[in-house]
Image (cartoon, rainbow, N blue to C red; front, side, top):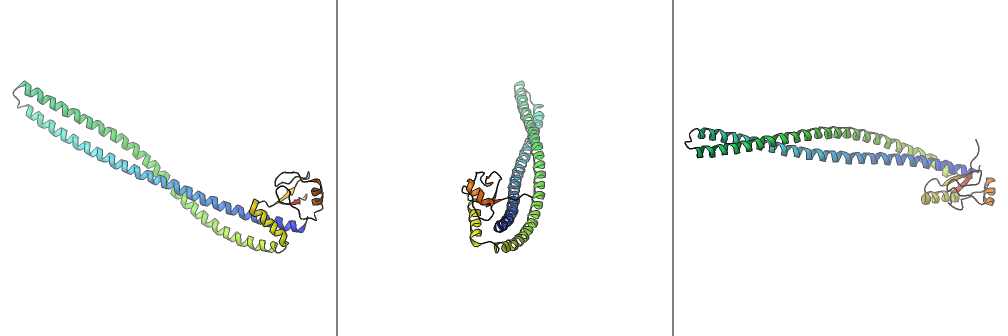
Amino acid sequence: MNQQILFIIEIQKIDMDLLKLEEAAKEAFKGIEETKDVLKAKEERLGKLKEELLELNKKIGMEELNIKSYDERIAKMKDAQKLIQTNKEYNAMQKSIKDNESLKKKSEDDILSYLSSKDEVDNEALQVQKEADELTHSLSEKKDSYKKNEKELDAAKKDFAGKRALLVGKIKKEHYAVYETIKRSKKLPAIASVTKSGACTGCYRMLPPQQFNELLSEKLFMQCPICSRILYIEQDN
């Protein structure tokens, strides 16, 4: 195989390995940001649930005061009823007692409803808190992992940079310029093998027979006429 092509293949391997590491770092960072967003939503939900609990407790407290007030009124009216002389006054007082008992019953029913709602909110709050705790733990682990991988990425970049610089020094400037131009415009891979049938594996289009035959000589530096990628014939192991 053309020595220049071998060097470019090695450079591309370094660039692709580095790209994989950078993409993995981006995905890890994205995962951290997504976890933060979910955690924030859980914390906001917890805040709303706490507000709901406060409101329900206030309503329960108000109804308990109402019940106490109704009990006091009923007790006073029953005491007063004992002193009433006429049926008309007795019946009127009896109606007032029943009205207050009905109001008391409504307050008791309201309290039961509020307590039921409170149980639901409490259960949801416990579940959301559990999920928030798990997310907090997960976020901490992801951050630790990201920091560790970041250090490994920096070390890999330095290692790759050294190896890459040695290879670049062995490649003709015009060949390297072609590689960099393709890499920037089309992204990797910038160099592609050609199948035995004469198809470029970069775009899967057939090469003109004459160009394919010239490429087989492995002496020429060629580009695909369709996708512009640098071409080479892959050697059998």
